[in-house]
Image (cartoon, rainbow, N blue to C red; front, side):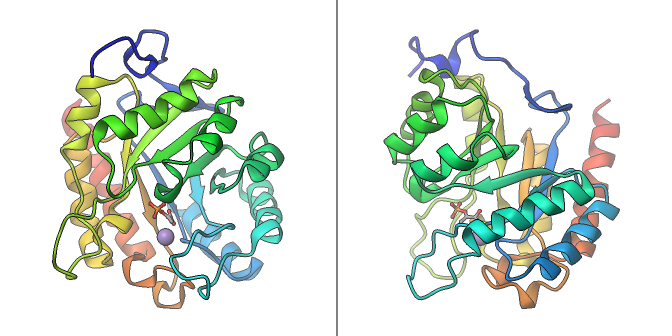
Amino acid sequence: MDNNYLYNSSAIPSTIKVGDENIGNGKPIIIAGPCTFGSYEELDEIAKELKKVGIIFLRAGAFKARTSPYSFQGLREEGIDMLFKIREKYGFKLVIELTTIEQVKKYGNMIDIIQIGMRNMYNYELLKECGKLQTPVILKRNMAASYSDWLLAAEYILNGGNHNVILCERGIRNNNSNETRNILDLQAIPYIKKHSKLPIIIDPSHASGYSYMVPSMSKAALVAGSDGLIIETHVRPEESLCDSKQTIDIKQLKEIIKFKEEFLDYEN
Ligand code: PEP
Ligand code: MN
């Protein structure tokens, strides 16, 4: 594993710049927002509350990769335009999942961070397209991927010339019970830090599938050295059009932010 790949070479910057924000500099970031949204009003209401608690990175899906074709697929192009309006209004950095080469060509340079979903971790042509840009990319780990599959997927983006790759652990499927959605693999943090130069963030929402687990798993991830968290958040989680059971509310988000700040103080 430790051969001459870009992911573990000195060619890779240890800190990824997103405008004037940094990812991977020892100060963990929090990305928050709904899985997806059904109207501008809903998005605006959530954005307003996230802004109030100091969130800088807003996540929200417009092109949803759903398990069932009959589930809500996102507001698509119209949703992206709404997200641009919200960025203009509040000054967020936008984290948006893109699912096709055409979307990367059209929006890749316009959004702040491209999210590649776990289903597309193995979509090498899509990864190559992301490699042509300089926009930072969050590469989610496929639920069945080994660390080397994941790092080699990152290598497709790095090899194209885009060195701004952030890995995201979001739960692996190896539990035989249906009691949680997936299992959060926190061991990914020390492994990735030992074997690569890339920052790694944790998604406790898709990992557990339950909002009550999200605060404790977020804290554990920060203590384990995660460079950040990406958390599904809504003002009224029960109304979320997608992934409502795993979506936390603003009060729970505040608890995580408070812990992050206290933990940073403790470390310094
Ligand atoms: C998401 O972030 O909403 C999502 C679909 O994540 P994943 O690709 O990890 O399932
Ligand atoms: Mn989701």
